Length: 235
Image 1: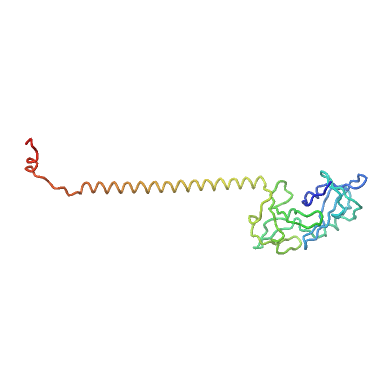
Image 2: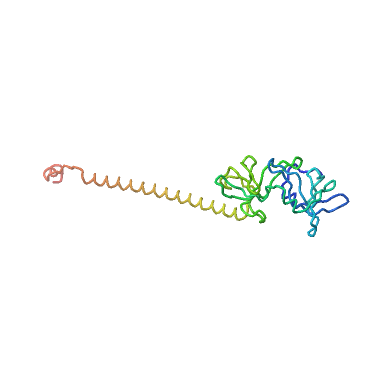
């Protein structure tokens, strides 16, 4: 089966590692990466919950991926959790904005399976282990600097990043914001129409008042009874 060109780290970690002769090396656990060049070198798997050793794999050992299982070729390198925890990683590092404040946590990344090159990171607002939480896209070009546990970016807030996955809470807040904005627009339109109507009514009243004054102030020539009598043939 053809391998995918790109894959998320979270998918790689969740897959069960299988070897030749149907050997089960357990599920993935930690990532092995080189942060300065944003490249993943491999990952480790845990054979069982009671085993202290860890199996370390290189990306080029992956032969195929079927359903939720990764089939590998060759033997793993044996290590332990204490050693693997000393490996540098940006996963769960705090994302720092231009003002020096924390705006999120590095939760995941997308990488090329063949080369290990990381395409971009995914950022969570808080704990990335919370199911269904939102994810924002952090491009490599947006990263200024990085230190153990810290990633510095050029953005001021998560709103400056592209939202890839929205949680139910975030969708609810966004929909609520749209409803309030729509209500404000309707309120402004109604207020403008009311003002226009009041202005038109005021203009009409002024015109009526002017016509009434003109009617009563016309200089009409008073005609005498004699003139009227002469004009009236019946008198």
